[in-house]
Each structure stands twice: as structure tokens, then as C-alpha cells.
Length: 480
Ligand code: ADP
Ligand code: MG
Picture (cartoon, rainbow, N blue to C red):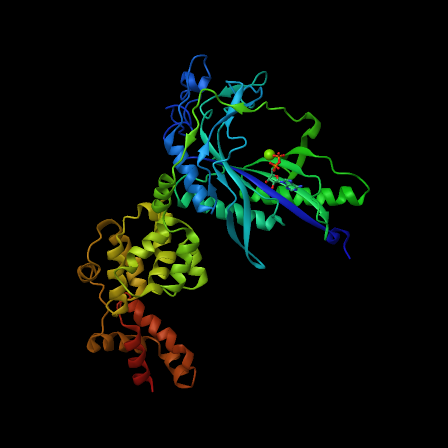
């Protein structure tokens, strides 16, 4: 047995999600990403004496939304606390957070694993404000501070130590990112820091109940890095223990240059944050009817939608999964399905030519210029044999994206209707037979597979308009 097989990994993730509000958590400054440094910095953000914070209602609403979407219990009585520490990008000298009273408790997020579904249990979701940014790579001799981000509303989503592998962690964050985007509370953009993850990792002997000493890898900024950091840590800790060492509780950082982690501080250096309720902010109480009204506004969630696409519309797992990658995509499907019953064709069109066209034009289903009923009409004329699929997707679709004309009229105008008039078909068929005497001879000697070649030639000759079924029949007649 491999030494490593004696151990199992235990992982808990803390994910910070920036809420997509217009303004900061306690003042009216914009939270737009990428602005000139220090342009969204009112006296409240700068922590000037005498300024007073005021809680952003939208941020509270968004926190409740994610809580409900994750099956949490919503706390009615909430207050904010000050977490005191010194840091250059923290102008007030404290961060406003929720210490002992997270707005959401418990809950879970279901993920797919190789062994089936698993519920990743949540400990809590709490609200807090973000800090500013220290920038060390502009000047050699000193650092820069950008306080635009300071005061941006965040929720921190904390799991129980119940994740058992880097693969599960990967699935969990992927699912969580889909969820926050789906309900519109966070853009989920990890590169811009809208979603950041700290991974807590420990190992223990299989069968052991007690948790091992954990290390925390901070600020992972992509899902792949979360996976890599976890894999690296598990191996490092197993090797350490196998060689007689002991694991110390540490905070570590991930080096994306060589996929390793390095220690930044030990437990003994941990801060004493001296938490206390922020006296400048009144506690905020949520009524059951307020919570209920938010619940009623929530859209059908991704896993519900997937189930619906499979059960109600008969789609397979793959199509349902792909169509539920984003809410706008799923909703487009549902919209088209109001106009045609050929659900499989909708999926094929959306995941094939339409997605390709959107990618090429840097558009999304969110802003899809093709209307649902135009697509439905296009599907109908293909089903009725009036145009074939390849003509419809290569010639009609690009025009429909800009005009939303009636597909049948457009096909007529462009002279693309499939020809099933036998006279015209016969001309094409005869031409092909005359042009390919050698192949015709081979066919007659028994190489029946050549029929495909002949049909293809007729198709070319007719510029895609010949009805392939009729052409095949005609060819078979003439060559027999
Ligand atoms: P801290 O006070 O150090 O932040 P918490 O108890 O709040 O620790 O837990 C932070 C995160 O670490 C949670 O996601 C939790 O599930 C996880 N965690 C706690 N103990 C362990 C452990 N021994 N191994 C792995 N993860 C752990
Ligand atoms: Mg922590």
C-alpha cells in the first residue's frame, strides 16, 4: 500500500464574494472595477473623523438572497461589529464585519462528484466590507495604496470542514460561482477579485474522527489555483508527517509561478481583533415578511431548471447541463420552447450554430439579438423540409440575427428554399452521373457506398437546395 493511502484530506473553504450593488456597503461611493485609483473615496471610505456610515439596503437584500439560494436559515436580528487591526489599506483601523451574528446560518450547496451527489454543508454566510489595495509593483522604493475597493460590500461564505478532495473543492466553487451569477448578486469574476477563496486544509489517518491541524492558503484567485493549492498542500503534509515531522498551524500563500505554497505566518502571530458592536451603526432587524418577499423574487435555481429541462422537455443530461450553465441561456431555451415543440432541436441550435455566432460576435444569450420566436420559426421550416439544416444555419441564421425577418420569407427572397421539384432535381442528378462515369461504373459493380458522394455532388451543384432524401431516391432509381 502506498503510504499516502493511509491518509484522508479534510478541507473547508471560505469564499469572499463582492456584491454587485451600485454603491459601497456604508456610503454612496461607486464600486466599479478598474477606475482611476482613489477616485471612489468619499470621507466615509477614507474613515475621516466625524463621518457616519449608513447600511446599504441592497447589500442586505443580496446577502439574504444568497442565503436563501443556499438553503440557509436567515437571522432576523443582525448587527455589525468592528474588527480592529492595523493595515495600510484599512484607513479606519478596523473592518466592519459581522462577528458572532452571521446573517445566514447553516445551509448547503449540492455538487456532483464521481460518487454521485454530495451536499457541501455551510457553516455561515456573513457580510463585511472589503479593504483597499496595496500595490507593490509600480515603484521600486515604495508601495501605492488604492482605496477604491475599500468599503465594497462582501459576503463571506464559509463551509464546514466537509470537503474531501481538490476535485470536490473545484466542483463546489464552480457551482457557487454559477449560483451567485444566476441570482445576480456577484459577477463571479475571479480574475478581477470579485470572488476569492481561502482554502483550509488538514489531513488525518483514515478512520480518525478528530480533525488534524489545518493550514490556510489565502486569496486564491482562480478555481484551478484552488485545486492546485489543495493538491500541493495535501502532498506536502503527508510527506512531512511520513518523515516524522509535525504540521504547524499556518497561513500560507500560493505561488502561481511554480504551483507551490509558502508560509506567511504562524498561529502564534495571530491577531487579537478586539471585536465589539459598531456604535455608529444601528442593529438591523429583518421581518419574516421581508425575508418571504425576497424568497418569492428568487428565480428558479440552476438545479431546479436542469431537472425541468430533463423532465418536462425530455433533454439529456449533457444538454440540460450546458443550457443551465448561465441563467440567460436557460431562459432563452424556455422562451423558444413556448413556440415550438421540437425541444431537442432548440438545444442543438442553441449549443451549436447560435452559440458559435454569439462567440464570434462577442455576444451572449443575455443580449441575444435573435428572438425566441424567430428561432422557433426557423426550426419549423427545417422540420417541414423547406430548407435544410446546413443552409438554415450558414445562410439564414446570420441574417436573422440582425433582422429577425420571417425565416420562410427570407429563404424565398434569397432563393434558398429546398427544391423538391422532380424535373429540376433530375437535371442535377443527370449532370452528376454524366460527369462521373468512373465512379458510376464502380457503383454499378457493387460499391454502393458511393451514393453519398453522388448526393454530395448534387448538393453542391444545387447550392444546398436539393432535398437530399429525394435526390437519394432518384439516384438509386437511375443507377439500378
Ligand atoms: P478560523 O477561526 O481559523 O478562521 P474557523 O473555525 O472559522 O477557523 O474555520 C474556518 C474554515 O476552516 C472553515 O471553512 C472550516 O470548515 C475550516 N476548518 C476548520 N478546521 C479545519 C480543519 N482542521 N481542517 C480543515 N478545515 C478546517
Ligand atoms: Mg479564516
